[in-house]
Length: 317
Image 1 (tube, rainbow, N blue to C red):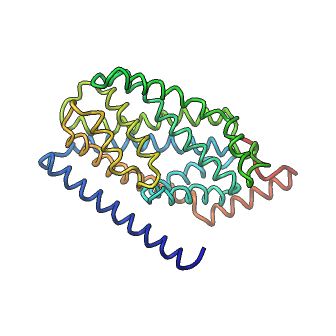
Image 2: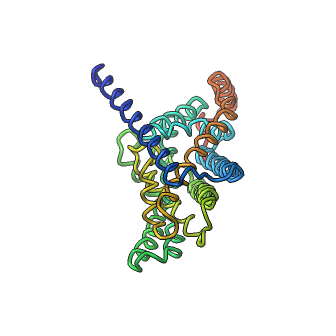
């Protein structure tokens, strides 16, 4: 890649980030104005932060489970430290952070990248599975749409089958010969999927806590299902940092007629602020576990012990 092309890409990314931040700032101001300066109480903000902290810890467990080995605490810490990278367009920072730190901890680059993709698949499937809850509680939607959502929620389940993942990697020249080795065990994939469902449950619960601060919520399960689906659609929209705008649009569409759109959007915006603050705090707490010197020393010690035992450096999972 030429220097000029690299410079153009960096400029484009910088512009995209600036536009995303500007959009978020405008959305925050609009949320403030639309609710006449009303915000949820401090205890609700704290409760939402605590719920999302639980969700992050569960997500870190899913990542560590997929990577396997005896460095699971370090792998979990790497996910926590990398979370803020998802606010970069395309989630580039999060991908490079998680995979890079996994590599520093002794995980091969190809395996780390593969496991990241597997985790993303389990998260998408988990989010889509909440479509069953949405279909059961979204009384304002047509029967056809609810049936379609329910069918889709079930239809995605085969995606967590390890066999097709191995098959897909086998179609890529660089991973063809090692596809079976790179993909985690089926048991680990299923556990990561269940943990992803729990993570989304915590995130949706946090949103519910905040939106309930603006008024009574008559159908809380609808809000949980709506947020999970909105999060998933925003997650799939890779070029948009953390699905900014898309998540709010989906929430406003699904929850139309329950609360005013301004309240629905405002709660989502305030939850983003809570999420960023929570992720920053946990990243600071976990950062000592992924210090480059510490990871390098631990990886070297692990390699030496494996060589002495005559076993391969890459653990099976």
